[in-house]
Image (cartoon, rainbow, N blue to C red):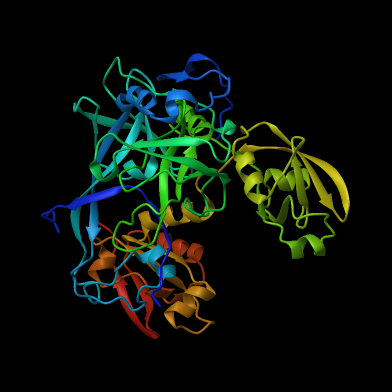
Length: 514
């Protein structure tokens, strides 16, 4: 029997790899009729917004053709072409000792061990990709996906009239996969923004974009589901509230428009579920779009501030299963269970405790942990979140004054600081899962290398991902912080490392970066 692997894929089309290079926060907003202007310190964004009346039913001639709806929208959807330099490890001749294990791919990539001992370093290549975007203002602001422009050194926009213009990145938010770029142009035709909150399952929608670079492609479908918050596309740190649709979305549709039958923008196409065959899977009838209500909040903040600010509660929440509901004596599995509380966080200061079940936020019931997390993120810092919690079978109200979400977590900050000081490499803590994958005893102490800059002292001495560092200057280390402190203490002097590779230890001297 043939097996079938289902994967979630971004719908960006990777079109070519050129020859190797020689060196080889939430902001509250209101829907209003007419134009809507957001004023910032240095930028002004004028949007064309639909009034609050419901979209008309699909009747009459529209049942025979959507041409009258689509034709005015085509000038508002553009092609976005990007290029960036990537490190290519294919063809280097090395073998990955962990095979194709997905756990290690998140740290090491597809084949980080090419070159046997770090002698054949990855080569840099220029990668080109195609996506889509939607013009939202007459003076050149374009809404798209973060993954369309992420890491791009060059961004080029092709308009409906085939005019090609260079674009600049205004801002990007990886947590919602939304980005804004700007072209120097005037008298453009912006799309009208609708309200995704009014969508119902079964509504007719049209997807407009540039799949596989084919301009002005339109597909039709319906809204298959709303509020998909547990898809996992944006990872653990992302915020999801996707519109699911069966309108055909393919590679290159990313950043394109999902519109209702009235031609109003109600979503930004972002990902598909694919069967996993080949480098780029095609449409399987399950596509996802970021709802315009979320995208607009993010977009307005990016234009005004260059970043997104979000409310921060400071608790670890988890879904309530039927078994947990029974164990906590809850009438249903609704709400969010507090699994942990971060010290000195707003939640801790307000008195939230492990085992609390948050059932309402500002008077509105909390459906589940995804619902609470999303709504807290959309509450501006400084506002008070009024929580109803169940503790020990009793309901009580706890008021929490939110602060700004720390976009750089402690782990991210440690990694960044460590990479600057660690001679071109990045390390992470050893966990039981990593030790098992490395086939090392559970009592092994140290840190594991997760990334090595090919042009660094670490690469020069053969260090590579998967190597465990156990000592620095003859002193054992057991955490990333201890390793970082030891490296910092050495200053500009070389350090003696005891490393463990496949269970065998050896010493190596690591010189400082010049």
